[in-house]
Amino acid sequence: MTEAITPLPAHIALIMDGNGRWAKRRGLPRNAGHQAGLKTLRQILRVAHDHDIACVTVFAFSSENWRRPQHEVSLLMDLLVRGLRKHVSELHARNVRVRFIGNRARLPTELCAQLRHSEELTAGNAGSMLNVAIDYGGQWDLAQAATAAAREHPQGLVDEHSLRRHLSLADCPDPDLLIRTGGEQRLSNFLLWQLAYTELYFTDVFWPDFSSQDFLAALHSYQQRDRRFGKVEDMVKDEDNQDASAAYSVLTSSA
Image (cartoon, rainbow, N blue to C red; front, side):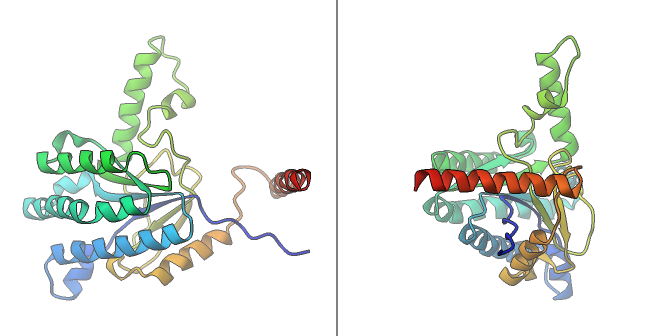
C-alpha cells in the first residue's frame, strides 16, 4: 500500500525579515534591501500560486515599524504605493483577491487610496487570497476584536468564538505554516491568535535571497510534520483513515 503524502499547507504566513541586513552587507542603503525584497515576494507568490496555495498572508509593515527612522518609514510607504500600483494588475490577472489588514488610521492618504483600489479591483477574484498586513500588530488585532465582541456582549460573556469573529482574518482558516527569514526565531507580534497551532519554519536566509528552492524546502519540511492539535497520534491516524474511507466511498458511489 502506498503511503499517503501529507498535503501542502492551505494558508502560509510570511515574515519577510532581513532586507536591511542584506543591503548593509552589500554596502547599499536599507531601501535597496526593501526593493529587492519586493522582487522576492513576487517570485514566491508565483510559486505559491503554482502549488495551489489557497491563502498567503505577509507581514509588510508592523505597528512597531513606526519606530524606525522617519526617512526609512517614508521610503517604505512610497515603495508600498509604487509596488501595488505596478503589480496589482498581475495579481488580478491570476485571479488573486488582495486584502489588507491592520490599522489604516496612520497611513498616508495616497497609500490608503491605493489599498482601496487594489481591494476593489480584485474583490471578485476567487482563485486565491493574498492578505497584506500593514501597520498591523497581533496585540492590536486582539484588542480591537475584544472591544467589538464586548459591544455585542455587554453582559461580559465573551468566549473565544465571539472574539474570533472580530479578528482581522476571521473569514480565513488559521495559517498552517509560518515562514520567517533572516535568522530570528520569534513571532514579533504577528497573528498572535491565529498562529496558536501553526507549524513554524525559521531560516537564516535573508528575505531578498529567499529563493523558490528555499520556499519548496519549507513546504517539504511542513510535509514531514506530525500535526496532532493536542490529540494523540493514534487518534489522528484514525481520523485520517476515516477521512480517506469517506473520500473513497464518495468516489465509488459516483463511479
